[in-house]
Length: 361
Image (cartoon, rainbow, N blue to C red; front, side):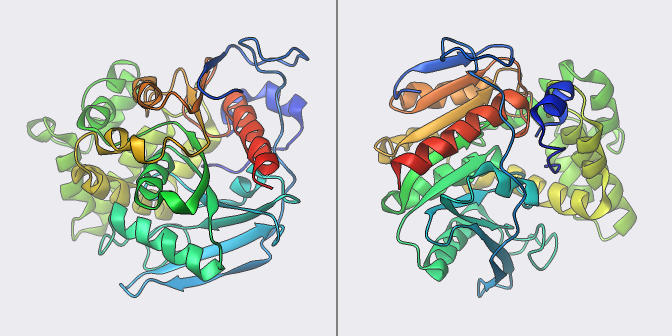
């Protein structure tokens, strides 16, 4: 995800597309605007993120399986522990994501998942599955000496958060989820075969371009062939096309900064190779597994934030999760797409992190 623009709320309102509650009820947030009303279907006020901060500790965790995982800790070493799970898979963390949490009240742990960001080796697909990442989260928790922590994840990060929590429910104090994605076959086909293509036919043509017509019946498989090619030029062409399709369709309004990031060669290569690797294997999950197993975690305090016009992870999946998990605080943001830093989504997530800073202290 792109870094935060300047954190003035006025600036944020001018360029909304590029910005990155009670239990058991639905909140629908209509068009964001500055106001002082209580929640009655409207966001109370747009919020800016917390100030920029630097890590107080960072390093690499050796997984013992050929991967070195970059990690960092920020904020208050004695604060409420929280781990941030980035998207993709393959996206990596950025300094802007530290700013979702009050640094005076949170001990913030971020890490780059296998093969992406600063983790090594770059763009590697070996020993890289959902369950390897779940194990890495536990290794990291133990390394940090944390008994339990809150888990924050959006998009693919929500997938990983659900998989981790359902595997280790006794290690999770709260969940903050955004842009729900569970890797069901219909979710993948919507975005990579037919569905989102009807809304972005111009962008879809660019996504189709590297693939001959005879192979377009299975776009994920066709891209896998090219993303794992021995020819670096073929790999990079496919990587940029795959990555740009996502970068151009994430936000409610166009965001040139996001498109630029997704076109950068190193980012695109890790992002596309790892993402495609996970998706062609269905995330190594049984069909519908994460929603079916939600009974294991319904006792965990949870906020779910979803953009109404999310084209990458459509609201249907979040709705299905909400129906299976009525205790969770489900918030539907009408004037938003998928991106973490769109104004209504950002405000809801900052409110969620504030809530759990109070409740878990």
